[in-house]
Length: 127
Image: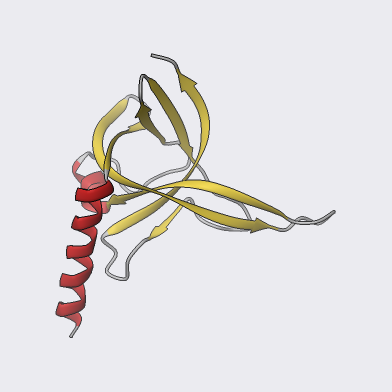
């Protein structure tokens, strides 16, 4: 049964990339390469020692772990950047931990094939 589930997860993942995937540039230091990603979003409730908590929305990029490994950048690290071109503008998102002990990334599937990388928009370069 596990093989059937793995096959289904792989098929769905491939279909998502094919239908709604975009090409982004993954950057760490001087190293960079293009990779296919599916854009998502996660909302985190951040509690504070003072005042009410806040909800933080992160732009997520779902990327195949093997693609990052092939590019020589695995696992994702805080401070890495993902550049996404929209029209003539390039939007830069930085990988970061959302808070409350949440990691900067987590697995998006039970077979540890696709990463959900949490980012925050930091800059836009007009083209």
